[in-house]
Length: 345
Image (cartoon, rainbow, N blue to C red; front, side, top):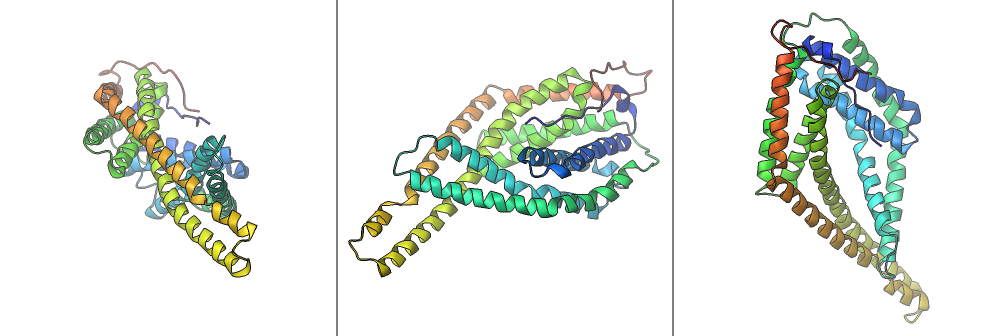
């Protein structure tokens, strides 16, 4: 499911940065609030997660201009809400990948696939039960006071939204460029994660501008291609750690079962012989090999895109957009008027 993108109007560009940031954050939180009665639906949970995550990204980006509205306590509570939805998302991704692989397993792989599927299903059920039990109340605890503070009137001195955003675009584009340059030397998990987060922050900053600047939408599209690659690599790394933990648990459980059966059944018992043949670890090992192969292919694809200048072209486009954005924040006598392509909704 593609999350709705909130865009600003052209007249917002010259308004105070704090005022527009409060508006964007308030609208994001309103989307999340509208989904609280639908959290039994995984798609609604996904939309909720994205809305709150983007609200928090706005707060982080414009924090110097939101000090009066967002207190440290509210900031921590909002972070807790975002963190609470992360585990279920990882489990969903792992189950989806497992189901794709389970379409036609070999006989010796089936015990491992079935065991892992059951493990992940039980975990996901527990995670959703916890979300349904606590998430709505936790969100309301932060949303009610935060909404009131975001809607309050403030003096709002300082630079325009366009000027402030232009500066942040330059800063974040520079950071993303450095992160991608690091990937040319090091594709370990740490640098990959840092590049993914940097790209996500840049995209969330660009998205509200897509209704005013056509080139912003082009940058978002290009950025999402790189983010999808980085995101899938990250998911594979998380799943790999899950498989390592699962193999230890499966081995211990299998040995315990064999010992218990050996204590109660004859050595030549058909049931004991069948249990010896059913080893979940074979399926888990085959999954691990496939994850490694897929991860290697994705890294090579990402490396090729970076060699071809995908990051440099993207950053150049963002820097050009930042200049246009800065000009749009000047007084009308000093800047050409911008034509709006879309409105905030």
